[in-house]
Image (tube, rainbow, N blue to C red):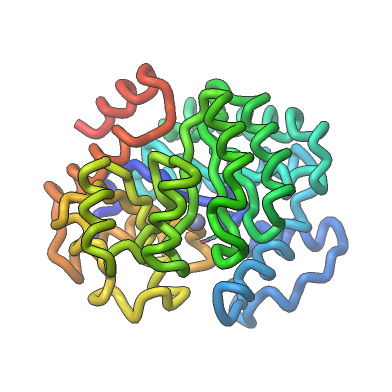
Length: 326
Ligand code: HPA
Ligand code: ZN
């Protein structure tokens, strides 16, 4: 049984983390950058744990040096993602990985990404939107310019602000300034929390950063009062089960709390995070949810409806995508 052709909405991906290893290898060869140690002998990405993953991720990003590299990246990623039935995808993009953090270059990088996204939409029927993302382990001060970039470029393509990276750096309150700036600019917000940090990190993220969506959020499952709050306030979790299994944030598919959260009324959605890093695709996620928990077409239709409702795009786009899910 495969759900490859089922139409899908995906809210949680990292643009650079969707780059196929062969694509990054090709850029490294073009630019004569030696990053051979980030690859396994059979051509995958090589990392031992989450912290090492972040280092390998940043090494891969050093090959992305121009707007044209990002244009090619978006094309390659959307070709692959559309092949798995994804009709709408949101992706985290970080000014810190564009132009070596030169914020003046941000507009050019963004224009190149949007050009490739528009081309793919016309050719493959997949819609891409970007969420500007602060990198948490670069510290609270580094997240402020990212929020400024988000505020300056919000529009048809940039639709939100978020934060990714090492979760155990500081506490959520330390990052309130950038989230306040993005919120005041009118951007909807999401933040990685509870991938590693447990329920308290999710609770503090809601209190101090006032987000409507949480990246991962699985740590919340251990706190019944928090689960009730997520359900009552309709905080949407961007759950990435294959990522959690690969990085051993959970002990295996059967132990994943996505069913417990969903059954408690929490709005859950399903995404891949960084598919080639975690050896997953949206087809694999759906097929494993079917195999492990018996989820079928109705469950996936509900998941996609939840995701589309929580998507940060405008309502015209939402209505257009809704037709593709019918
Ligand atoms: N988690 C946190 N930060 C990240 C990830 C992730 O899975 N991928 C890229 N940055
Ligand atoms: Zn993520």
